[in-house]
Image 1 (cartoon, rainbow, N blue to C red):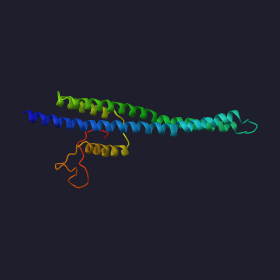
Image 2: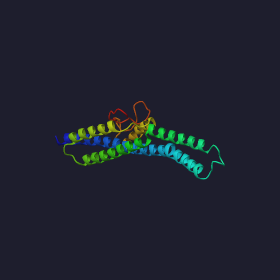
Image 3: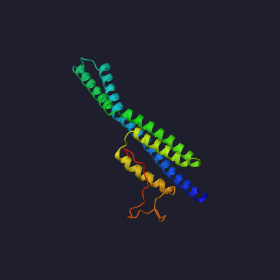
Image 4: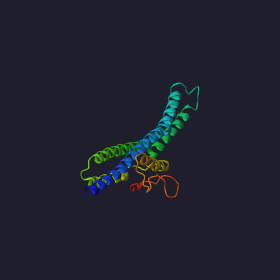
Length: 194
């Protein structure tokens, strides 16, 4: 009986470790997505508006109407360009996407910490496993979608980290997938966006 309960606890620890790996990978990917959208906003919204604003300031303060008769027309055109850049930034909401990804990253980091604490605590392992899996699923539901490139990278990172931690799912311990294509993928929680 003691051996059986020890095996169950080892199985629970393995499942919790898989959950921890997934949460850590998700935190890292959402952190990268937050940086990506922050850079996108800066390069495609802020910089163009700043350049156009600088152009307006130069035209308004340095050039007189006698030197450049089309000054008012150019300033009006630059105003329309500024409004267009602001509209594009508002429509795509890169800044908001960055904040959502940053929030999701922090939530996954907290979850990974909770999972790691649960691995060290053998009490109520099955109950904790279900709670933490439910928490992971809730975070995934609330988190914004990641780009396709990041979804593929997630699978690869989970597989690599599972192998590093001795969590490959193979029967012979070699890490080889039966079809010879590489490592067998660990079970990933079902989620709408992953």
